[in-house]
Image (cartoon, rainbow, N blue to C red):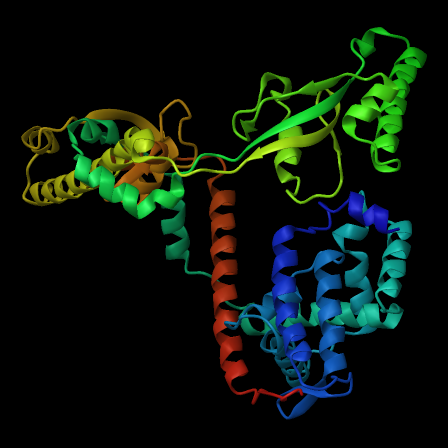
Length: 503
């Protein structure tokens, strides 16, 4: 049962981010309970909302419901409510859910069991080709039972989810985004731009920069801890190579070849683990060949471990005080059983050894500063000149810069053959015709661009009606979320929330 959900974790949105968020909320609660001076009982009051007491058991039950709804019901309603008010996690986050439940009751939002069941059956997690998959539903019920939720409790979770959706609708459903704002968004997203770019190459300023020996020494003294040699490790290992040309052999021969290698590996590991024999002794007994490497660092492995990143990582992950004589790891080319024979600790590098590296760092810093200064000064001069009615070509020439023409750029589909077209389109959309854009850093800091926009045109599209409708729906959804958030915060302020001193 659980294996089904694990195999389909993508479909159920079981994401690392979600796990971290929920863990953060529950960590605060756990710390509250654990840091008390006496044993906390499930019946102890944890917090009070609108004059109603909620016990430790209530909070724990709610926490499990949040996890279940997010992981297995593919619903984020509960977690979204918990995140509305600023919080570092803990009881104050769960208080939001109790506030929401009070508001639902106050506004007469009481989802029925039938509504909850209907919503449950429509969950994507339980659908197969648009229809309810009974076997999945049964597995979900079994999973819920394993977490302490019977059928009625599962429906209660769905009632919360349906109720929270209705609560949002009561507050915001009638709101629709301004057609003007939607039209502006449409125009910004689907215009075609014409213009030119001015490129400020970092390398140009790097060539003009100078660094003194005093500056290099000062930087070294302030950052010497970052200039140490890499730890190096030497290993002895036995390599069990995967059979070659398996695809050319009959199935039985393929399986036998793979089985033979597995048997050799297992027999060798038994000697080094169960019988505690050294790598050399185990190799002698099994007639395997022991290979050795000189000390190497993690970023420069020897030829034998080339492209074997998992093997190299395991070699350097091995604890220095490990009591196990050997480690085994599967690589791309086969199995490796190894022991670390030598460890060379990192050593402080002398200034002379890293002088060129530091010089390059300082040149890069000075180049970045000079490039940024040049861009800001050029943009200001160009903006003032354009405002005064001067031509962009004359202004660029006076600044001793180069104006490079750009092809037409469709904001919705920037041409891939134009370098940095996506970044250019984003800034051009925010720049008025006849104006110069903000600085656009590109190619990981290798250059900065200024974009001059000479024209914009909103061309007809066969799907313009659908696109405009989608824009309105998207903006409306975003603004509704903000409205609900503002409204809920106001309700939260009047909820008279207090937290018990547990302990």
